[in-house]
Amino acid sequence: MGAHHGQILRILRDEGAQSRAILARRSKLSPTTLTHVTAQLLADGAVAEDEPVASNGVGRPGLAIRLLPDAYHVAGVHIGAGLVQLVVTNLIGVPKAAAAFDFEVPQTQPDAVIARVAYEIERLVAESSVGRLLGVGLGVPGPVDAEQRSILASLNTGWRNPPLAEMLEQQTGLATVLEHNVSSMAIAESRFGIGRDVPAVLFVYLRSGFGAGLVIDGIPFRPGGHGAVELGHIQISQNGPLCSCGNHGCLESYVNERVLMRALELKGPPPSDLLAQLEKTAEWAPMLTRLTDSLSIAINLLTPDLIVFGGHLGEAPESLFSHLRTHLPPRVMPHMRDILRLERTSFGSQAGAIGGATVALDHFFYSGVRH
Ligand SMILES: [Zn+2]
Image 1 (tube, rainbow, N blue to C red):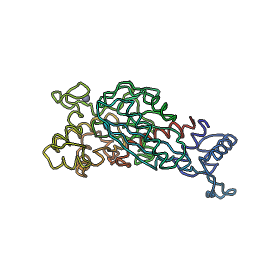
Image 2 (spheres, rainbow, N blue to C red):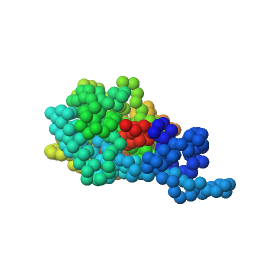
Image 3 (cartoon, rainbow, N blue to C red):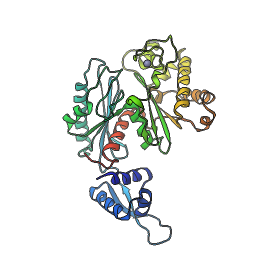
Image 4 (cartoon, rainbow, N blue to C red):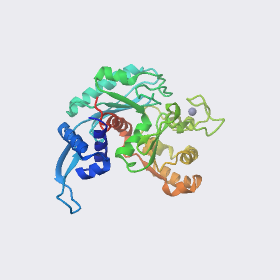
């Protein structure tokens, strides 16, 4: 397998079954190379050749090559602050099995979390009878190094530079890749969700922190310093509360799970209708204002065509979306007013884990490189 195989697999993923003639035209591979590549993919079992596709009336119709979505599987893992979610998915991100567990922040060390992840992956594989996995994608709560092997610093877990990919590989024997967790969610929407065929997708995610991830033309935006898109650390008040980053008055210092739980006088695990409960209180209007202020800055800077909302924002009452759809357009550049769409995540509470799986598929299948 190699880059040409990956190119053909990505066309089949994004555009469905295709004749060899169309694959040749779309990939710009020579007929000889294409024949060689498709023969290898057929032998590998990743694609099948079956029903004829309609021709343009010249010559006989060719047989279509199509992806076999259940030929292989990967594991996707979302590591959040205090919560881990796992899925095993097929080649188009459809979950076949899922698991989740909590851990104490900041007491729990990364090796304990990784040991439990390895155990859960083995259990899911055994239960779902999917055979050997191609690899694992870990969505992690912080920026990752250029090789996508280590998380650099995570404010919300206190972890510093643990080589998570190597740690998991040693326990599972499965190739592992890391990505910033909210960036993984944006990638999943762009490949398999509501962000398909959308040039720029911004994902915003509220749970213990306020995270964001941006994908442009299918590629995660990874600016200097390996940084994620730190929308949560836009300063909205110079005299605001101390933030986990050391600054004062960041969006995240006002809009995070702990602060919202305290406003609602709630204890224990956060309810899935956290924002619906907040809607009934005096805290709701200022939160909407802060969200509108911050998103209008993000839209003018990043010009996303689509903003996808996940975590508590994905479960938010409809009034949050109607507020933003009314109050954001006047705050952004005129050309953005007609383009911008605001939608809930396609993947509900599994967005992070499916994000991890999508990153694994990108690296260990659609790249054409197997490990
Ligand atoms: Zn901050």
